[in-house]
Length: 116
Image (tube, rainbow, N blue to C red; front, side, top):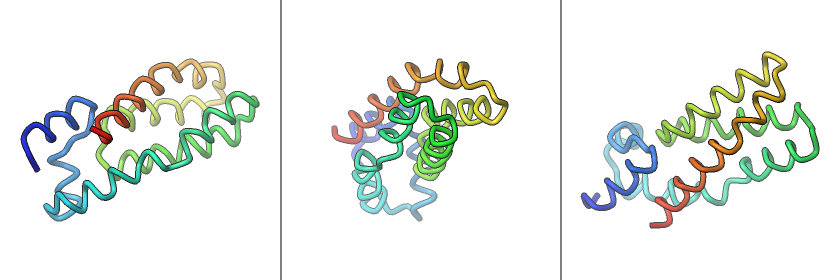
């Protein structure tokens, strides 16, 4: 993986070294999975669930997206989603919803870095 690409991904909160270890050092395979991330529908589902005030669907989407981000070592986004899931599970719907501007900003940075 080129240094410029590595820095681009890391600046978006992706721990590339950790991600590469999950992909047995195969940078091409990691890139393949990163390129699929913007097509994942869980962020959209999370936004739609919050718009509809559907706490159960929002929790499910947030939890699933957290897992995807964790598997791809998207540490910043995964951390925010972990916090949001914790808030949902504690019944703190408003607090969970208030995290969306931070989640959206991290999500957009991540997708922009992936798309390069």
